[in-house]
Image (cartoon, rainbow, N blue to C red):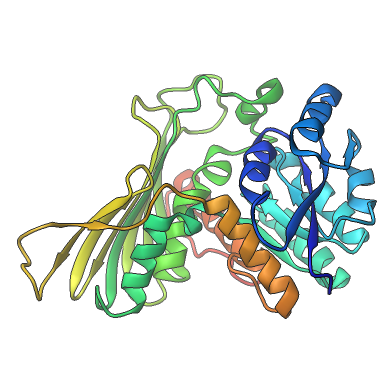
Length: 335
């Protein structure tokens, strides 16, 4: 195993945010970039002294110096690019969601297993300092046993349709899968696997969409806990991701937009909130790449691996099915 792992990034929109954080991660070296915009590739190469640039993702995947391929492209390109990386024996960091559909997730995981490499889903919200702190409190006994939780992803897409308006094309992206997966994944991360989902949704704000743009999702976890996830994509509301956790010993309210969390503990004062520091400005992109590198070096399963990412996609589709058919649905978990 080389001391330094070479990273190649496909997609210089989300990928540009990644490279600005990972350039300082010990043991990783940015060695290749790819984008359809040739001028953008040259700019990135010059700014970050990247030795290899291309507009052909297959060339990046086959490049000898690349150990990890980061696929930071629109949802509908994820499967084909992952398969190209696996065919070249590369590990993959896949921008969320893992893929568009349950079937695409199955195909990707099958290709990964056949290649014998690592696959990680870039569910970056798990790596925000504030949510890491909440996760710690659910595991170290601070909050006791979790019995209820709430997560939300509020992001108005009206004016960010994406390249060629791909975000508004139902064949290329469903809003709940492509965006709402943040909140669904945080719910699974805290509550565990979901036994049953029941969803109501509507469509009021983005007429260009062929799908609903607001989702209220009720979750019944295998553990016995219950929860609610909200995904809203056209509302008049600032962007944010929320997490509220109710435990037998305490309750916490946290958001990705502030470095503090509000916590209420029975042992202190069950009627009073305390403001608790929960982390500085998030460096989640750097943290997730460090986790994948560690898993590669130690041959372990990374946090938010392919199976976990697939289960989050499946949970989203179970919610969509529930809303369309007016009945509870059991999410797929066998990948």
